[in-house]
Length: 231
Image 1 (cartoon, rainbow, N blue to C red):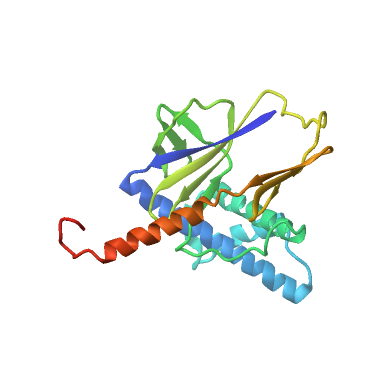
Image 2 (cartoon, rainbow, N blue to C red; image 1 turned 90 degrees about the horizontal axis):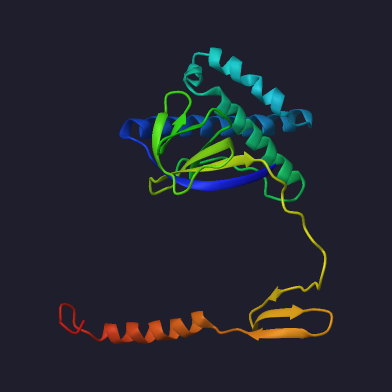
């Protein structure tokens, strides 16, 4: 099987934006609640929580009056959020990432949809109350949609990343031919050693050249009178 990921711009209506903002907040709350629960459990018992153990808290929370609003949220998204939290812990323990952090409203918001996403004309149909959202599908969707993540940038733009799966073999790595390592540096842009020789490529220093040019232009601008034609 081959997997492909594409990023698509979404154009939700005002009502759909309000629903997505609520979903972002709900998913963020569950992430922070789960992360805090993992911390408290580890401090008191010296052990962590599994994905299944964490998901067992969801039915209990939905029955409580303070968190009964969780019933209105698509449960698959919350469980997918649990999976992402466990993956973040795994990456931390294997040294591939920093310790999971609490999520803030001011940062980029994202929610995962693990299933039940369909392409309808030039739109995407989401489960639950979100419904059909207009999308800019710049190329045909090939294969079966496996997962979809909806995100909102701090500027208020909506995107979705779609992972598809289709028949075929993934390309295999080949170790035939010559092997060369590439070292990026400051004095020399790249140093490429192979079996016979070491090649050096000079640093063109484009940034420093443009910085000097910008400094001259700013000095020239400072001498101009505000409102004059020359300025």
